[in-house]
Length: 510
Ligand code: GLN
Image (cartoon, rainbow, N blue to C red; front, side, top):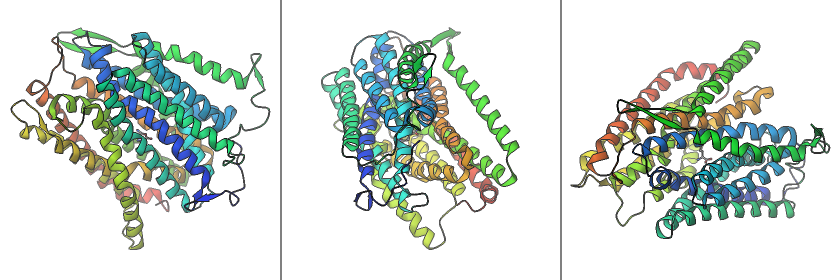
């Protein structure tokens, strides 16, 4: 990656480099498309794609899980190709274009088109997401105290997109049809690309984000220039991924389902390979590095558990909202996907101010304690949903306030973990491994979707007569939420108990 050494001549807006605001709006629109589509995805699969199957919930959980796992795992490859060949600018354009096409293909009503569209979004996100985040980092000098608040502003952009999109796309889908909702997501992505392109036109990025050197795009591999080969291979990989996604097959034996899903097998393989590689690196490292690497892996593991429950919002919790929450006159089930982002927008600044205030008093809890507390918040949030069944009306629908409180608590937990962990990774990884450890951090979201799939399948409701809701589904969900609450609370308690030791291993890293 070509990095500009010029920091001081960047034009400033609100005390931050002007480029931050172009990246903010580009990412806002990209996340608009991502979360607008995600809000519709589960319901669309249940109501349209797998509508004819009795085990439609099960099939939906399997495909949703594979999609989520691959959409985050692809960022590891996208980050690497950007570092070595394309540079961040080209990667962001390539990713954005693939994602827009994906969203527009979703507007075609056809099962093959559906899987191809998801694959284009998977490949596109792999190029877009890691690179736009790294781009933010390059705007600040190493150690600049403004960098953290720059990332907080950026996190707000993500969540403005995540808040508005489900509301608009959910409304369009319910009023005019699914494909208008997906179409709007595509327009959002194109808007993001235009914003980024305007930033380049206005020269706000200096020479940041260019390929690593002048010749790398021209260099030929197998007789083809790398600058052409990478986008061509990216496009060609989409049908292959579509095949993987659609390879799901439910096998019913004695009323129980199991599935043959290659994506699960691939992820088990990736998990083993990453752990083996990390073990090798730890073996090679000196004692201090070994301790720090161990903590980085541990934090990533805790984050995986948290995302595994948190990312249920687009699957089981959306279904619970559709089938068991009294949303009459409030919002649609798809629109409930906006609640997490709404609370992040409300809480991000107060919580970061709280850390600063606590630091001044020397009371700022160290990272492992924040992680333990984050998991406890997740546990309490699921406990709230678990006990909501007690307030169900005569039709088996529970008041909306339970969902609202649940998302409030889950969002507090997220802010205790996600932004904190992101910045700790850069402190804990030895310089030679930073990119790799960042990739591992993104893999925590990828593996989380394997947990989401597992839970989604456990809570799948089989039905042969169309829609199910009310008391037919209520206890399946609330019993499931109670179990999740217990696991999350247990995990939080274990992390808190282990915190004094983890704290010691972290040494000076706060
Ligand atoms: N909500 C955040 C985003 O979209 C993080 C999601 C995740 O990593 N699972 O960037």
